[in-house]
Length: 106
Image (cartoon, rainbow, N blue to C red; front, side, top):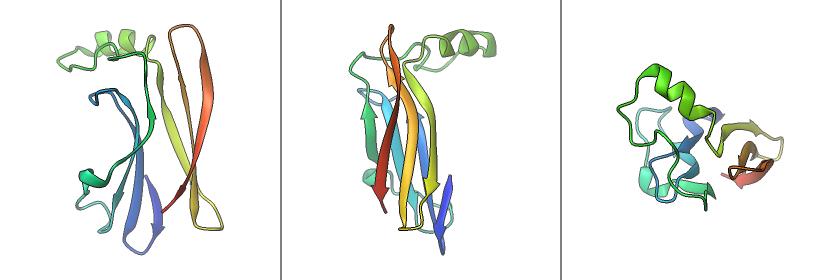
């Protein structure tokens, strides 16, 4: 999560329950008390399909095993001096993963 000034927060996170799953950005105008999920922005949508373990109901050991085969994740954001947010994450398929980025005007 990243503070944008005032009461605004930006959360950038993997959402493995989407169809297709991907990396999302969500904004709160009240310091995280509420989030308008209808306004979420999908930064990356996986074309490979449902991620292992995305359905929930997994033990901690199973979750750690699932993580080895996840195809995207670890998003991080930095607020730049011009007010945009620079986001990086990894994404790919079962063979190749790449470092990806997006620059958000918020």
